[in-house]
Length: 129
Length: 181
Image 1 (cartoon, each protein chain N blue to C red):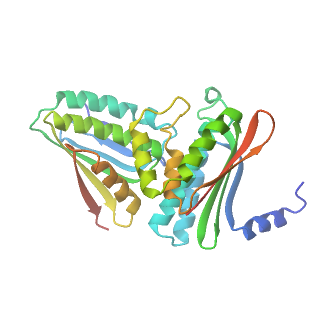
Image 2 (image 1 turned 90 degrees about the vertical axis):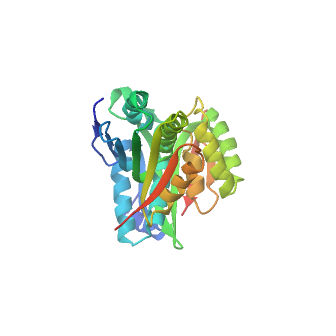
Image 3 (image 1 turned 60 degrees about the horizontal axis):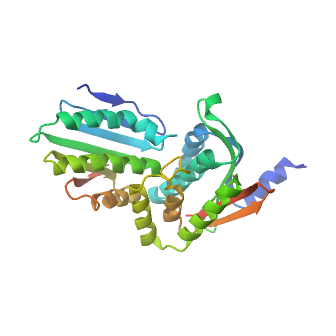
C-alpha cells in the first residue's frame, strides 16, 4: 500500500496515513463543505489497510484537531467504529487524542468518543506549549 | 432606503453587532469570515474555549444556511453551493450572540419547529445523549450533513436557543435562530 498524504486547507486537516511506520495522523481543522466527500479517500484507504494488517502490528492513530464541526464528528465516529471492530478481531490499534490544555471542548468530545468504545483504547495527550 | 450609512453603521454598533452579513453565502464565506471572527476574538483576549464556542456556532449556523436555505443557486453552476441568508454576530452584556436567518418552505418549517421545540426542552446531559444517538443513526432523508448542527448549537449555547418563523407568503417563512455564548 502507498502512503496517503493530504495537505491542509483553512477548513480541512493535514492527513498522513503511513502503511510503513503504522503511525497515522489527522491534524488541524475540520469543517469541510462536505465532510463525507472529503473523507471518502480516507475510508477507502483504511478498508484496504485494515484488511492487510497483521494482528501483532502496533498501530497508532494520532488525532490532533483544534476544531471539528458536527459532520466531521460523524466521520470520526465512523473511523473509530472501523478501528473498534478491527480491535475486536484482534488488531492492535490505539488512538492518541492530542489536544492543547486550554481546549476543553476538544478534550470533552474526545472523552465522549472514548466512553463509547470497548475494544479501541484512547490515550489523551496534552501538547506541551 | 438608508439615508445615512454612517447612522446605519452606528445603529448596528449600538446594538453590539460586530459583524452582519446579508446575501449569498458559500463555503468561502465560512472559511474567510470564520477566520476573521476568530482573529477578532483572539485580539479581544477571549479564552480559547469561548472563542471556539462562538466559532463552532458560527460554522454550524452558516453551514445550515448553505445547506437548507430555500433561496439557493444549484451547485452544478458553480464550484460550491450558494445560498441566501443572514448572519449576525455581536456582543452585549459580556456575552456573544449569533443570529442566523433564511427563508424556508412550509414543509421545512413544520419539521424544524417540532425538532427545535424538542431540543429546547432538553438539558445539557440530554442534549449530549441525543447528539450521540443521532450521530449513530443514519442521517434522515432531509439532511445533507449529519443532522447534528442544531444539537451542536444547543450544546454550545449558554442559554436555550431561541427561534422564530415569520410568515412571508403562502409557501414560505423567514426562519431565524439565536444563540448566546
